[in-house]
Amino acid sequence: MLIGHRYEHTPDGDLRIRSHNHVLSGTVLVILVMGFGIPTVVLMEGMNVTSPSDTVLALLVMLLLPAVSVVALLSFATHETLTLSWRNDVVERRRRMLLGLREQVEQFALGRPAALELRVRKDAWPAIGTLWMMLPDGREHCLSPGNAVLLPGRPSTERWLGEVADYLHVAVTRVERGAAGADARPVAPLPAWRRRAAAFNAVHAPPPRVVRKASTPNAPKATDPNDRIGLLARAVVALFGLFLAVLELSQALAVGTALFTGRLRVSGFRTGSHSYLWDERPMAFSVHTLFGVIEVLVVGYIAWQCLRISATGVIKPPK
Image (cartoon, rainbow, N blue to C red; front, side, top):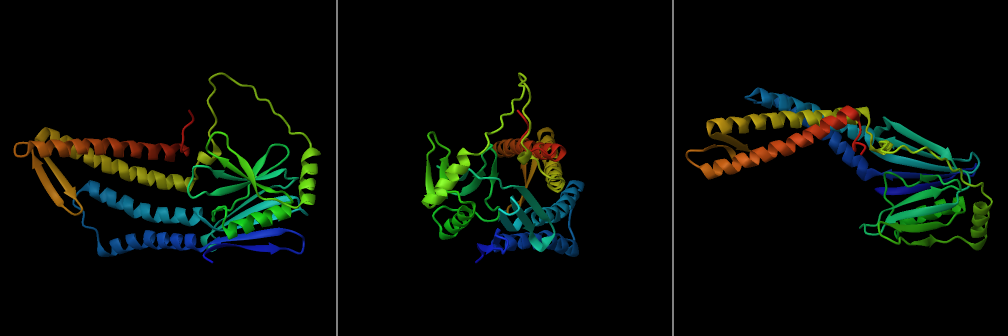
């Protein structure tokens, strides 16, 4: 199977689920070959540039393509292993990138799970679910693999949910979100003795700890850790922002020169280069100048956002 799971029950009584995604692996390989192949071919053939701005743009593209390939190679986890262990009282998620160049390990205590929630957006299509393990103290941990989606109703998804539920002795409950009055219904109910054991664990579990924090009026909200990006991704975003900034600067110079001289030069990939004169075609000159101003504003805003993200590392600034 191109995308699937392999289940292992170790002699120590642990459950190990290995998820693989060969489609993602092939995509990363294609990006890697293109990212390093295109600049190599262009450098071997030679670049024909006529202006300093075109030279800078070509150099930024030559740097941007390999950088994007490296980010894809080190960011997309093509293999993931979920290990549930009653013996060690631990849950381990191990993500491995392509070629084994990078590995991420996440561990947290297993404890006594109170519930398993399969959260699905009610208005989403397809209905992709994420499995969350709820602990008696209010904490929750995501158990879904990052390289394979869970689609409720499919045999592979139902088996994955059944293996986790049987090992933890907790029934999986489907929770539909995204609309008022979200309802929950069981997906794969467990036998009666297992439901009684789960109810006993939930009742006799220690009460959740309530931590009260002092609230300050008009205090700025902390940024979500999930909204931050790594140093390598920030470098790629910086290169893309510089590329857009140079492109926007060249376009702004062209539009500014056209406003003072009455001559606008427009170049296209298929149409080639054309010059519009105010004395000969005022309507065409005005329309293309207006589109040039709009392009400068839009590209400039995107370039500014890319440079801001690369400088701060935060995708969404705190409100």
